[in-house]
Image 1 (tube, helix red, strand yellow):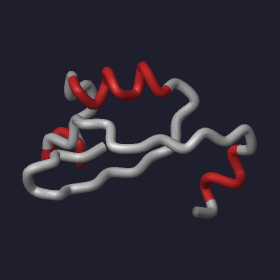
Image 2 (cartoon, rainbow, N blue to C red):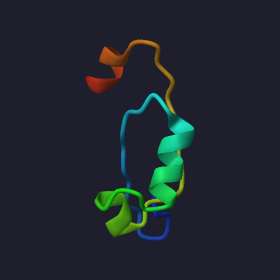
Image 3 (tube, one colour):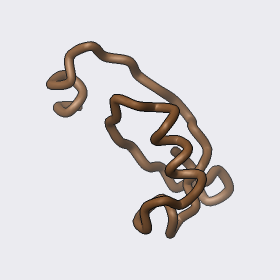
Image 4 (cartoon, rainbow, N blue to C red):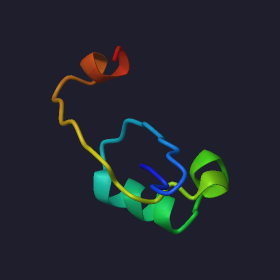
Amino acid sequence: MSDKPRGVIYTGVTSDLTGRIWEHRNHVHQGFTSKYRAERLVSIRISFLRSNERSR
């Protein structure tokens, strides 16, 4: 997720991409993405092995 104008980048791992994007855009959780308004999806990487993604 990014806030585009300022160049803030947020990375994360989820099994529910649609739901997680909705949470970010609606500021469900007060934290990094709410503070910096990182609401734009920039890129996704799909992996079937969760252990591979956590080590990147």
